[in-house]
Image 1: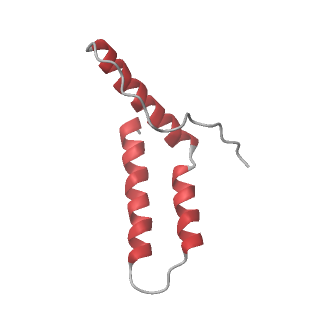
Image 2 (image 1 turned 45 degrees about the vertical axis):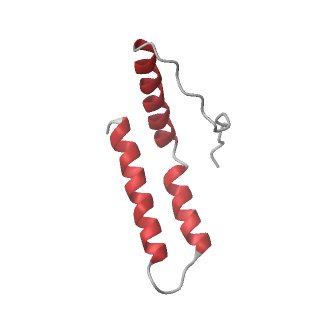
Length: 81
């Protein structure tokens, strides 16, 4: 699976989780957050996002553009457990 495919798969799965949550009936916030965490707390997904970011920055540098500054805090290391 390519980096783009991996990210797209995660987004589509997360959309499904959110679609389930907004359906009528009882809602379980903790379960929804747990399901979303299971999707996004994935080292392969993190690697895919990093790879896509690096490609985008590399392409911008080749084109002579300065990479945009991210308003997001620098990534922190996760520990598995």
